[in-house]
Amino acid sequence: MRYISTRGTAPEIGFCDVLLAGLARDGGLYVPQTWPASAKSADEKFEASYAQRAASIMAPFIGDEIDAKVFQQLCVDAYSTFRHPDVAPLIEIAPDEYLLELFHGPTLAFKDVALKLVGKLFDHVLAQRNERVMIVGATSGDTGGAAFDGVASCRN
Image 1: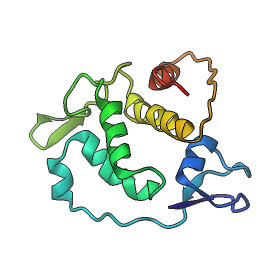
Image 2: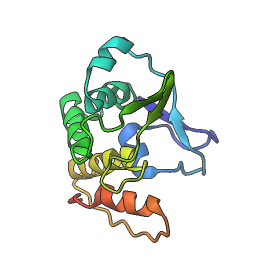
Image 3: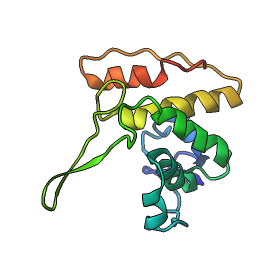
């Protein structure tokens, strides 16, 4: 999978480079050059665990840059600290009314759902490249706490 900038002048790059780059050099956002089709049916994804569904849905966006079994394990590890086995359970609160609970992560912020996996991905890609980064941040809200927790156990 290749990614291009929304501003059109940054070079086309792969998933792992996008992960570590954040914004494109031209200030744009990286988006997939083509939108992948899902090979699995909705029913197959429904029967899987949250981590399995996450890996299945995201795999086409990663392509062959991270081994499929390794990526699956990164997803399992990322969501293993959530307080609910479904990670983000969909609760029926009234007939035909549902609430998606996004507060079961380690910091109780909805951002845990993304940032726990991002931390695992950072660590894996940096280890593969034999690189390290230092993350420095300041915050007054829950974004910082979730971001820091997402990378707290990372070695790289």
